[in-house]
Image 1 (cartoon, rainbow, N blue to C red):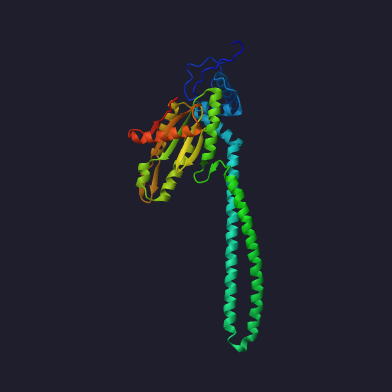
Image 2 (cartoon, one colour; image 1 turned 90 degrees about the vertical axis):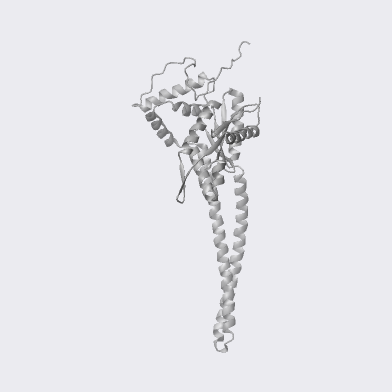
Length: 352
């Protein structure tokens, strides 16, 4: 139909570009002039977006900027990453820092309340000691003057104790109100304090958004779910050691992920990585790299050296299935990985 837009086939940007449409020629990057090279590279990124018929929005540009950079020289990547770190304007990271500060502030308030409660208990104990000493002195008629002084002191302590009790009650009420506020904030948070990655709520939101983007632009994205090997978990009886191992996995996930990837804790030590603009073939390669990275990372428990191992489920994200179905599919991939003893990851695809 005249005037209609023909949807182009979009490449997976992790793949080679041997067969893509010819684009304006841009000279090779020169590592000796990084400022000029970045300008040239930015044009390459823009051309790639145009070739894939994607709008050059900040999010799309950032995603392609990160992915296409993987094919550049090590020296150029280091220079660009150094410049990116100086920008330090990631909204999500800012939000995470605010969440950390809020929770730390709440912990401080709780500590103040506990200290006040301890002070109140000590004042109550002092009252009982004064009563005991008064009783002992009252048995000796020759020190009636001391008994009088203690009686006055006892009254003063009682007044102070009453004031402290009232203030303690007020602080507890303030603490309870603050706890409600923090609880409401936690329901809207995006960060998992325990493992230092995004939380389940943020993950589900991002998958939902990615489904909408795929519907609009028809690209490929994948989801992988990762957990510490059950065989390894069953062999370790120390709960603290298991938590430390799981945290190590979280750090390795962050280490191997790209800025456009979403790393989150789904729950019960199961992690997820949302791989945008990544098809199943490249998701499998990412899983292989992750398995190799983890297997080469040993964990020391007392005098015992333990080789870490994970199991991964891989699935694609499409517009025909809900977020929950996509999650279930990825979890099913983990089960398939356990069934196949030769590999540590498996792909699970849903019927269309």
